[in-house]
Length: 316
Image (tube, rainbow, N blue to C red; front, side):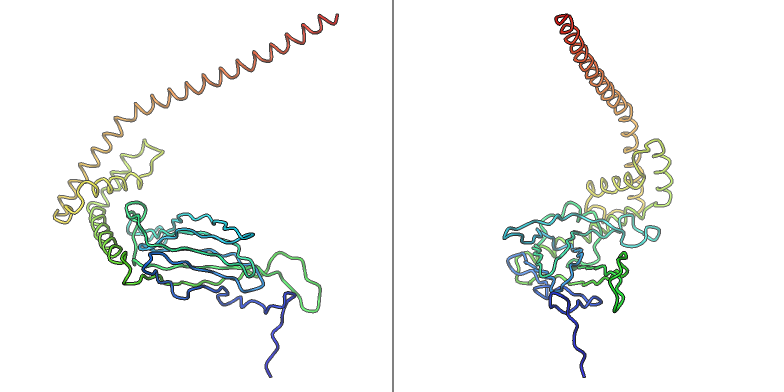
């Protein structure tokens, strides 16, 4: 005999907390010929869920996310989230990082969150900087809920939550082959792969010695990390030489890097005195403004004292 499913006060069955509880529509996330896809995530359960959305893709981006409140659209803040692809000490490539769009929302019972996913149209910024192991990517939806400790046949014990339950769903992204953007996206990804190969070649040439020399050059620039300066050098070489790097030998690349580094540090040394003078001038200007403000305040205080003194004289 089958057991009856218990219900709570709302009359809804308890959530399947160990399975992914949210409804995602459509089930398959295929960007159509229009170039964008609207996705709805619904919470059919009685409990609210903390939901985190992560979109990892070279081809696609989140245009916007929103929910309805009193019949009006309320937008959800979306931002870039940078996190290590693997543990830092295991990273062989200095920029082996996954970059994703991330946003979160406490999804109430029966609430629907709308997400518009579009074809990417900006490839020269952050997406050119990082490595992608696949172009299409996926939408990762993580939801979690905290359940209070309950003892059967007794009153509910008012403790902190004892159960922290999580569930995830990875939904692959793809594009309709008939979409006009499909060919353009494939070409952009091919360019990105070539860009990564060139950058890796630049990185691999004279890497061990390069790190030591960079640290030696950087010791008196405490506000700038070695990795940031090294990255600037790589970007500078890539920007200047581009596809010409494919025809250069490792020795030629090494020489370019040495010359580029020397020029970089020479410019930094030349700029350092000017930057110090500029900082000193700004500090002096700031001190003068503070001094003037104090003098004005003292003048106002003095005037108030004179008025009080004059008033007393009149009364006498």
